[in-house]
Image (cartoon, rainbow, N blue to C red; front, side, top):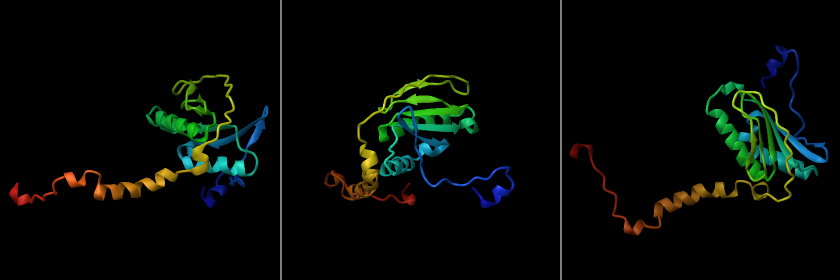
Length: 175
């Protein structure tokens, strides 16, 4: 947020010291807001920072205002990306959204419950703590960082390069 905005608002906004988790009935809950669930490495960093501090979350909770997107496909995309976050972290994810999809996603990525689009609904979620470890939390985007270089080098020599005829250039004058 722009430093000058604090003078035009009736309240002050400041960044917190870092990610936080709190306990509810013995379950450690890590909140995040809005589009943070779209960015995989952000949720990974949040979980790993909390783990390093001895408070790894058992449950992720996302609070969001998806009203900006009215009834567009952005609502569906946002929900779909949250499924990936639950699987990557091996943690259930609860979503409370106004005008978007509120949902309960288990650690396997199964949408256990989904609210209606742009309408009010209520559910009582009973997420199960998943004690499996997460390869993604431990190793991150290791594979994704290495693939572009491998794809480039495979494209140059390619597995079937010897079987392909040489490329011919066609000049515009010949057409």
